[in-house]
Length: 116
Image 1 (spheres, rainbow, N blue to C red):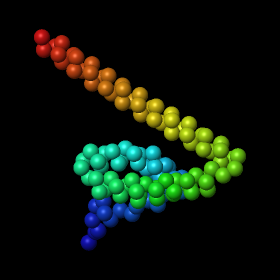
Image 2: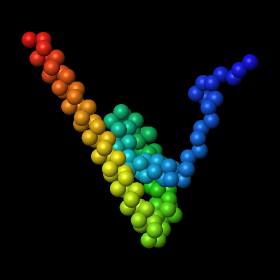
Image 3: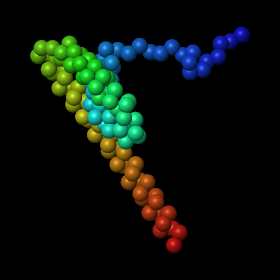
Image 4: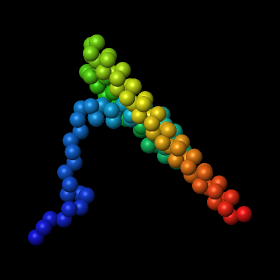
């Protein structure tokens, strides 16, 4: 009998150190937004945990990974190139979002114009 191929039976791909570092960097950057979001939902205890327990842990891990990865002059070049990649990726995503919003607004305007 064949084994079911559902999502749970698939093996998870192991994260590379670069991917793990990127994930930690994003988590460290998102901490203030996460705390504000949790407080807004009324989850003050969880927001406190994130702020006073998990936040310092994530920032410490980020500092340690930065120190290990961006050591020396070669590391400085790597850090700069990664920051530029991230910046360009964010700009590309922002442009895609704006273009999508503009096409949505144009379609909405055409519907209004056609119904008159």
